[in-house]
Image: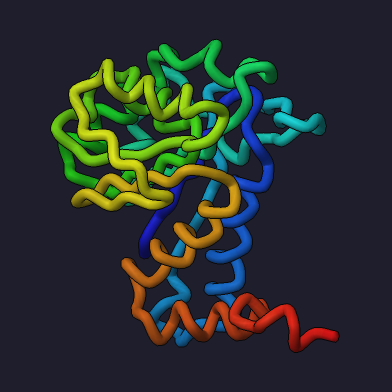
Length: 207
């Protein structure tokens, strides 16, 4: 069984969480039996977080120093982004998060960072010599920050370098969720999930 953890920071953007919970939730219903063994949980260093646009999101699993070893059972880590005005960057130096990233890097496990979450990921100091992207608009102020880390900034909407996958915004998180699904299952399975979720239909055909 593949186990996926979605790490929730305060101020997280709910859409960037929901794209993964929905894609993999649908997968476990419509995929062939051999692909339905994917477990996904939201985890955090606190019981709940307030989302960027309001509303509270309760973590399914709270990680602390006493149970941090439970993080080592996960195969994939997803880090949704959020807004600075919603306190997203205030806990970027959280020690639980740092130790989690250290483990995933050492074990060469898949790490997915979306939009502004790339900054929090790089702040741990464990991501080096990798190609990454982040939010590309707003005068590229997030993208320009990548220069201070030991990485190669790539001005693409989605960048994959080994087991590090990054993207530039909420809309791209949906694409990235599908790419991740294909990466750990198959192209045929990804297309089947898209078909069942009506994600592959041309909007002009709806009217």
